[in-house]
Length: 288
Image 1 (tube, rainbow, N blue to C red):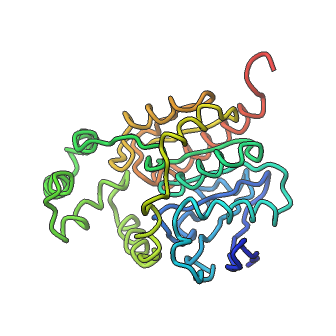
Image 2 (cartoon, helix red, strand yellow):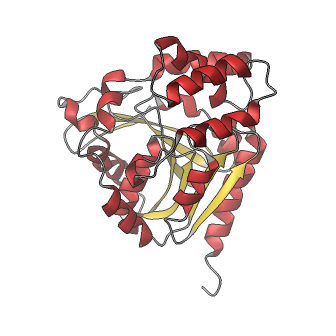
């Protein structure tokens, strides 16, 4: 397991798997061990995945300054990893909360990004609004599932701000395209993989400047993929369309019957989408 040193002296770990052009992967959570990304549904057959363990997660060490868990302060970690890898430019993938870090990096170092893939991205960095009805409307697509009624009642409680602690666990089926034994095991492991202290500070005051971020993304000319899950209550399709509209060369793809982890719900579709994005992006826009 290779390591490198961040600008503040924190030793960070990363994992390299697969074959093909490198793809630097930033995990969500926020602040979850990158192990949950796995091989991204078999994408390792096409790409060399470089999974960063964010500071204080996975095999990376805990920083001396807890305030360095703030998302914007981790941009330097991503740049240090690029330098460690000896890459002039990178293809960058951010999942969920990790997409916030990915777009902050792209805004600060646009000349270093060849392609940007945002998989079911969090919207904090760009300041988009997700309404309760956005989430509930998406959830109602699952109304024929046997677990729907109690999970939906809990989601209504969560979106109205009156949730009790059990409601947060009860809505878990909505995160997955299939709520089965494998999803339950994945969910249980997920609970143990997150650094809760770091997660609480990731989006703390000062982490994001949405107006400045939107302006930077409007000038970002690299190809961008925004990948949404049809069933994803965390990143509803309506909002993902709005997100894609912030970037001049963004493509929105909605993966059918997928939740927040589309590489698990439809691995072949996910891999095909990511491979096609790279091929299309390599070709460049018409006339180039």
